[in-house]
Image 1: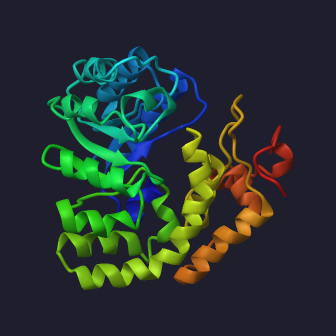
Image 2: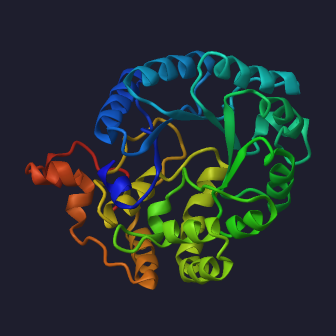
Length: 316
């Protein structure tokens, strides 16, 4: 949280993977207490079902949650557009917190639209009073991104997670935000390139924005290559994301291992590639890898790799 504030971000999303509901609640409480009104705090509801989403939203609001991110689970049974609408309506009508919905195609909605994204269902979802934004997934087809922006920008704040799509869509519909991806991969608190890029677009200073874009583009290509295969499979390379955070001042530490088959493993080659991206940006990063593996807070308390039961997601 302190790292997000130092980076100049206006909001953050709590996304603790492979955790129980009790742990998710504890995580939200700690983050909201630390935020103390200095930054907006969102909860990641994806891929929770309706009942779990409502439970987390209800608790989150009691501790200071400001909004949430919701997406249709890939294992949710969908026969028609109304099933998708019903999923989001059930969540939206159970809270007055603002919701951001996930613009991503999925196997369970392939039959509703050639793109795999249930476009017609979102015509109704976008009209729900507290649905305020749409995140466009990083590997989204550019034509689908354009269609979603054209259809929904009059009702929703469109947030592309693809750096290359931000200036294009900004010219078309105006883009006020990007987030819920590893934005720390392109900046550090002392060199807030991505924040400066978004502020330049907000001023309609397209020249300044594009100079920053071309500075960040080589590093972003590396980020895209790391994330895309996991995103397309419905997962995220969480350990890599934590590594990006740590290199520029965050806590670090690999996430809890899941029982699934899509857990990413951070290899020496991956780490070298990630570090090279920061080199292209002129950003100096942290060096002590053991500090990452146990997390900065634990490292300062004296914990070391030998104290961990497993380092399965970190390949030495």
